[in-house]
Length: 262
Image 1: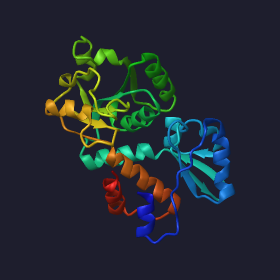
Image 2: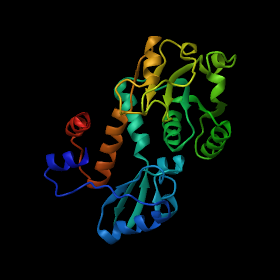
Image 3: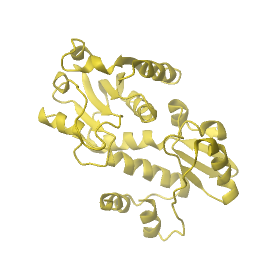
Image 4: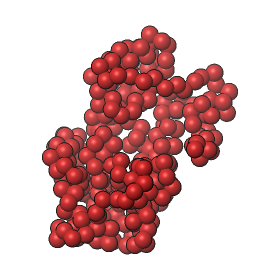
């Protein structure tokens, strides 16, 4: 995606992968100015570990407590979370309403943080559901420090089709986001009461390796619309590209490059 954009704009830049062990994260960040890099993307499991090694955080990164993009300019290492930007732009492109009563995020890992921050901008209430309720509660406690929207933590078991609580949690949901890795390699999705959601509820899966994931397939059976995370991947990358280069990204070029990827 990025290298295709560099070629299209005739920029003498390159986007490369650097495997980094967990105990060398600080060294990797220190290498940015040492090697003359303009910045980095940060992938799991290092999105939170890089934070203490940066000079400044954006409002989004501060709210998430996680960084996926580092920009180095004029001696300052700045952390940003373009995952939030990518979600906001993709939901807008997909026609997801800008104002929702309730939203649900499934999962309480690093990706769920960005999802919850993005959801908070358009929802009165954000419900974080996880198979480990203690992780959901910890995430909600952490996010309440920076997010004003109502945040609730719930055991994922309460959203099963046979759970009496499911209708109460899901009955007013306008958007449900899968921020877990379930379905990444096919198989079936965990028990979830898709039918308890309103007919207009939109289902969004961060997984982008398949056009129709188990999560989206289950929603489609009940005539719920949805999309995978390819648009989020595109828009978060485009936001990072603009931060690094100061140039408007060639979105169509980047989109075609992603669609060509096997």
